[in-house]
Image (tube, rainbow, N blue to C red; front, side):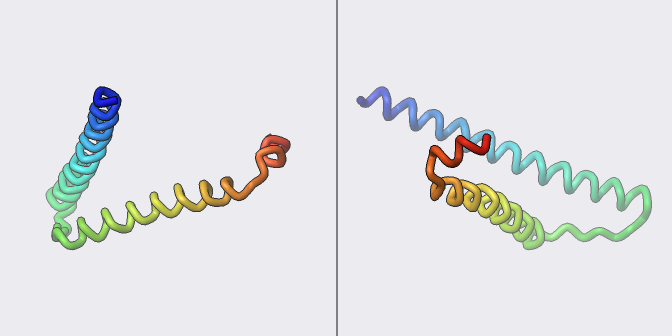
Length: 86
């Protein structure tokens, strides 16, 4: 039983590491592309931490909503009726 708990914990850690890596990669690509636009087109593009946090919150909210809503809708269906339409 203890080994099973350890495996579950390690899976959660891998998933969290991947999620944080992808988040950081997205921030780095966004900052890099905005810097490139600033240098090539000479547009002033301010990068503020509050805007980055807002973008993360909005994208997280959209992901949660569009993941939760279909799952909740599917959970209310009768399994026989749901399989009939596939």
